[in-house]
Amino acid sequence: MISSSFFYTANWAPNDLVSQPEGAFVFVGAIVNPASTSDPISSLSVVGTQGSLTQPLSFNPYVQTRYPGLYQALMPLAGAVTGVGWSITATDGTGSSAPSVTAPIFNPVVLPFVSDISVSDASTTPTVSWTLPDLTTYSVDSVFVRIIDANTENQLFFQAELGGSPLATSLEVPDGILQPGQSYIYRVSLVDFGPGGFENTSYAFSGATTVPEPATSTLLLAGLGVGLLRARSQRSAGVS
Image (cartoon, rainbow, N blue to C red):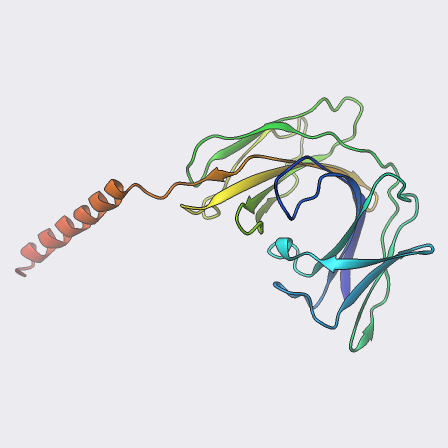
């Protein structure tokens, strides 16, 4: 029933989103199948244990496009036990799953944030750019980018592992993601991998950027052009 589980540090920059916290946390999560892409399965309970600590995990409705069936819990990093992994179990009307056990966080670190996240233009395929912090004393393996709908806060796009040396400082948004008349926020993450996958992460945010609707004059000209072409076609075919 649980296909994968996670345990890592997560440092969120200040932001205006309901779905995104602020501050340094540990993230405990699990992907549960069968997944519900809109609401949690009503009879499903997902619980993590770490020694004597028991922690329910909650369905995250904002990331289902990328992570269907994600349940998660956040706890302040200060005071959290990181040297012991979590055992996560899902239970429904048919019984309980086998426990999914995460790796410990071997080297917990509060990663710094990227800064100066900017969007090149108001098109549907802009380039998003950012400035890396001084990473001299940190181990960072990759940059991840998510595009968040500023109205629903659903995460629409996920570009993983912009790695390499040096790390990436820009990304061109692929065609077909952004829509005219909609507003978006870009989240740029630094990721440090450990033996169990993600080990330390940080998340920084752009301001909201709106893709404008096509100008009325442009639409009228486009319609006029189609009309002229149709009229010419009808005349050449003898249609009046």
